Length: 130
Ligand SMILES: [Zn+2]
Ligand SMILES: [Zn+2]
Image 1 (tube, helix red, strand yellow):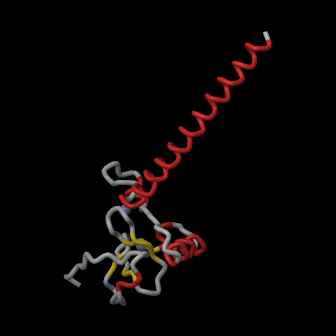
Image 2 (cartoon, protein in one colour):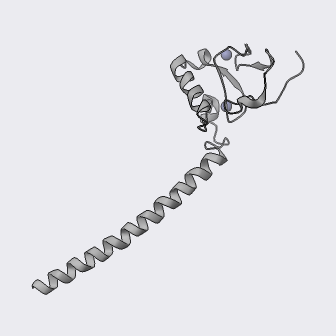
Image 3 (cartoon, helix red, strand yellow):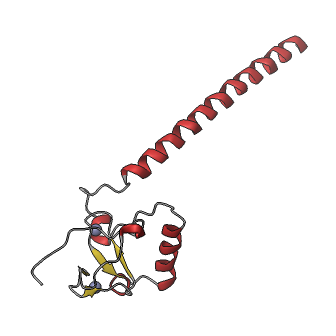
């Protein structure tokens, strides 16, 4: 097969329509079929059969459950994990995380202010007693 398709078959876009068999290949050059247990790397869009990853069927199915629940899953193959030029966190994940950090920082500042007030009051009480 000379034609190579770069179209991504992600766990998240199941609405992408049926994918023709033998379109994707594992890192070991074996074809990845629709009924095979395989994961697409989010780093370099390469497919990996779970047998080639030593991944259990249970873990693979957990990824499927997350994808069905529209939970964003980001999976990187072992090669991309050690590749420093690959972004480890997807932009979407990063945005969600950053907005959560903002919320947490805001709450922490509120707690800090309350704590400072409490400490001030306590110090004042202490001074009164002396
Ligand atoms: Zn393989
Ligand atoms: Zn990869």
